[in-house]
Image (cartoon, rainbow, N blue to C red; front, side, top):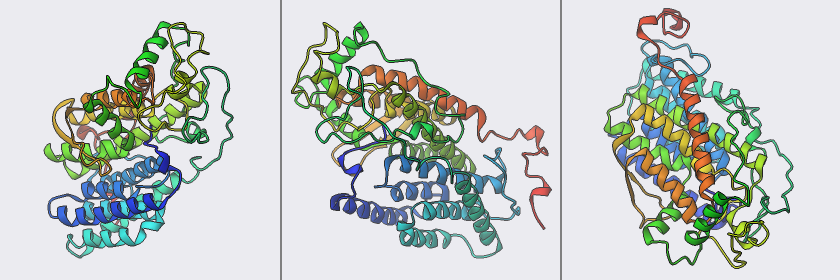
Length: 440
């Protein structure tokens, strides 16, 4: 799921350097694109750079809070959609661009105070593009209020609550994996309060295939053959895909893709704010749903299963005590896959709001400068993600398929319940921007 590697748990000097580089890159990118990127898009990019290097689950949380704050701020002025909770009182002349900047800055500064100096500089540069005056100042106030409201709503969501967990010892049960045998990460994530779905267990999936089943043996053989670090049947393209989706999580994958497609389609400021908000809260809720299922079933990883293939009771699974996966195995249960879960949710959101295919999407990552992936549909992305986790040796195919179904259900729920368009024929109700919403 969450793109975890060995550096995710300790802020080593090497990781610290990567964080500094990422922040500097965001400043340079801001300067280069400030003349052609709108405030919502630009601050989505800044958000992505700002959250780099922190706890991987908290990255996803920060993204959801920030993008929802931006939506509430812009929508309080533009009034195109129902608010997430309640509309911020806003004058008609308030600048939605200033509101977006102030909301993103406020949310990121509160959630990541160590980045405050850089964020303050970026805020000043962004606001300098908007003429001084009442409209800008009113927009700033709306943005600050929107961010403060969302941060307050999430203050006690359980994201920092420690939850005890004891690994299993029986065949099929998750155990710490080589090479570092790290302790289980995030056993309480499934209990965190979601943004939209009712609770983590709402879309809990069915159990994984029994160890003695033919389905288990088939998927065991696939990952054993293709996911081995020394596999001879895996192509270079398959290896590139596996490595790319080792270092790329939901925030780093789908936000850049949306920036490209929404720009190409000429989406408005309000439309972009809504798309980014729905995307990131759906990713967050899908991760909660996935982790609820992960720690409910506690299923072992391929690295454990293949090395102990003589213990699973399946005559078709051959043990290899020396087997190692191509990429680092995240330290939590295998079933279902986090990447497939948030990918299923993202795909459901984006196919609905941006269309299924016909896109031009290019994905890159600074950690793998020689890997460039091109896509024309959201399905192509999620298919590559599914393959990449198997090619990398960290998931069974059934992990991917079950999580994708679960994620789609989360995405569908979010679409049906959050940030719905205001029917122009019904304006004037409690969700509309009538005169009562504009003080003075």
